[in-house]
Amino acid sequence: MSQNNNEFDIFDPTGMFKNMRNESMEAWSKTMVQFVNTSAYADATGKMLDVWLSNSTPFRKQMENVMSHALENLSMPSRDEVTRLAERLTNVELRLDDLDAKLDQILQAIRPASTAK
Image (cartoon, rainbow, N blue to C red; front, top):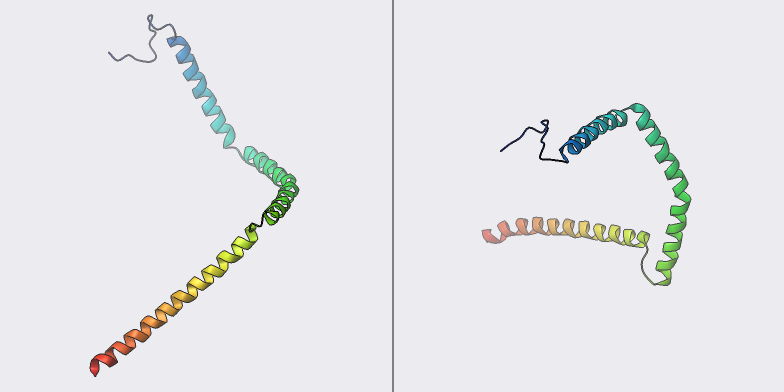
């Protein structure tokens, strides 16, 4: 028994309120989409973000300083130390790959010579 949503149903006491809610939400949705898609909104949002980022920079630096001291007191590595270690490990891995490739080349060069004997 399907029923059209726009029809009035005498047995549904909340139907009118549901329709009003749906129409109101649809109107607000259209209005907000139009508002958010304006360049003025984008400019205002950009300015607020710039202000927030510039105001939060000293706090962020202070938190980084406190965290590095706390990690140092706990004998744990800092972010910079972990980053440096990761870079060094990456370099070691690249060198090992290069050595592996060179060894493969040497083995390929030796195999034909050994099979010819």
